[in-house]
Length: 275
Image 1 (cartoon, helix red, strand yellow):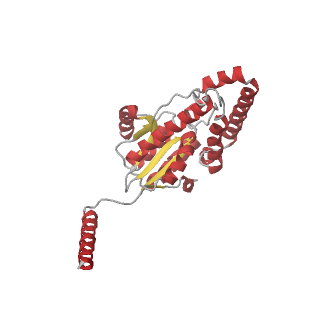
Image 2 (cartoon, helix red, strand yellow):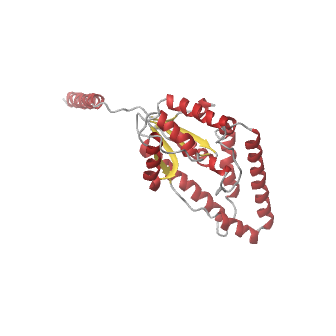
Image 3 (cartoon, helix red, strand yellow):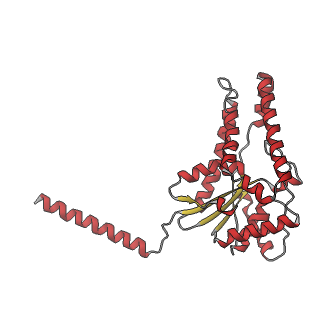
């Protein structure tokens, strides 16, 4: 009798499960994982305005005829693969103002500024037929100046080694921008080997102040925290069935790529296919 009761109960549970699945399917809700492209870039505006980044380089003049043609070509290729959303490295509080400019651009009433958000992001969104763009940045003050001041007092030798490292990094990228096409530079900023170097620069600073104020670990923690918040903003939009183009500095994309790889609700839309 107990065996029969168990069989009946199992049948009921199975039937309810099948009914639930059928109703879910009939609702038309998309269960496909979101596709997310993390497109790492250098900041186009650094060609004409000072950088706020740790490493300060003069980039590439994107207003040349050749580079404008390439941006048109690249944005058309990305848009042809039907992104449902374009996310830009702007603060979420500024999304309304960003979309006012985007609406003017669609109507032919706004000339794109030098930044990559407009030069590439606006182009992709317009060509994809989108009515708006989204911002996903989340500010976080980093105690980099405090870290350097601490080293100046506690370990001048270490301070000099970091200064030398940053100077070498600046020279490497300045030389690259001077000798590369825009396509080659963007390819470099999405190279897994460059991502590793980028992330490693924060690990290099992590032990500064160990046993005292742990200021190096504090800087690394705040940088990761900012990127976790940025990724949370991406997750909010990258729902099942969406295809999301995310444009931002390589300092962010290099940190967030492992997050995307670990995210079982989202999968990589590979940026490497476009170089």
